[in-house]
Length: 410
Image 1 (cartoon, rainbow, N blue to C red):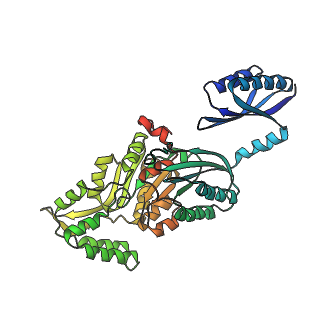
Image 2: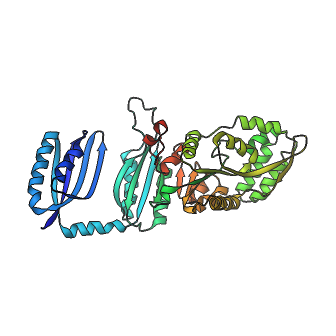
Image 3: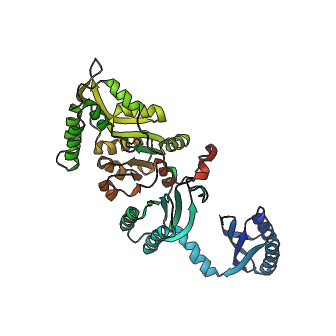
């Protein structure tokens, strides 16, 4: 018996039991479902079903479906699909897939158009678009003051590096952020996340806070400025700045630790990551004293930072203990922790803001520049500038609806 393919398109007001009614009719002739997809926007349904059935049954099936559609108050249409067209379509499933995430305080048609234009220029097809953030209130605009959508793309970019650079360029001018990732098993199985501390997890630079209390704030700032201009390297600048802290009592460190300004969104992010079983590390050019404070607050698994030497009377000696955690050391530590946890590097995430974070951002499977310095933004592949630290969750594919009432499933 000859078979044929028919594409069924149903649109209209969504209602409970609609799909069950359609499938009940199709089951009478043992129709084979070749593909199915559904979208629901503001209770407006769009359902597509591609079936393969015996030619002798198609007329009766379409007749019954038309009657059922009239009964349910929805629109229905049918399109025959030739064998050759179906085979050509089915052959595309071997193509690469990518995820483009777009996030901002709000998203306009112009902003989304700029992202879609980049996708088109690279020869990629959009398979679907879905919203990750909660529904925006127009009567209470202070609620849900962020918007995030995710594009599922199919194909191979003509120039991936150029695409990445163009997205970052648009990000600077448009008030939105992008993440462009290959949609593979590693993206769906991230397991280790490493954070810088100062100006990332906390909105402060601890060495500056210590310097202010030691009365050497201007001197430390001058050394930092020289390092940023490339006149001295990180090790020399760090050694000279720490030396200026000599004589400061450890109680000052406790006072700073008790009042650390936690970055917006950090509490929510950490709760979700711990609930979902992520291993979390702090890799910081700051100080272990403050890293340990955050370990206790958030249940962080690893803390690697710089250890200040303290004498028997509780005063800083102006020296440090052990190896300095600089940019290269951060990247090495990320690899070491991944090896310890038996995690593939492609399953790792790194988040930071400074130049000494770049090595680990580039080493990780997903490196995110968070409200970062211009030099870091130029080199990073993903950036978050428009929302808080919990914006990382959207780059991992979480939806707000999954985070309500403790539901943190992916």
